[in-house]
Image (cartoon, rainbow, N blue to C red; front, side, top):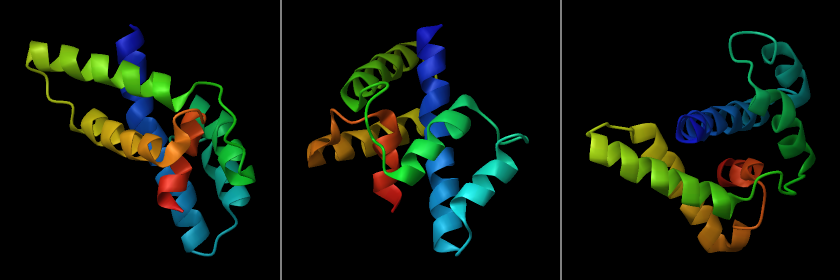
Length: 117
């Protein structure tokens, strides 16, 4: 069950970050966009709880990037053993590993936003 959770969060976090980065680049107020989309089909715990932190530049860990990377590697290996393709997880892992290499391993998972902005 934990691996299912981590797989879902990996892709969801990319979507949350991409939406907030798009809002900023498009000249929209990300806080207004967030309020508008969080109660609709795009809504998620990550959107409601982590996006506000991203927008404030708060990357304090609730869950460390280094631990998320460990979990994603376990999930990826398990999926490989089952013959399951998980391209979203692979991409998320590669981006989080890039952030860790840049010194973000002790930041919260919402620091993924730094990749986009």
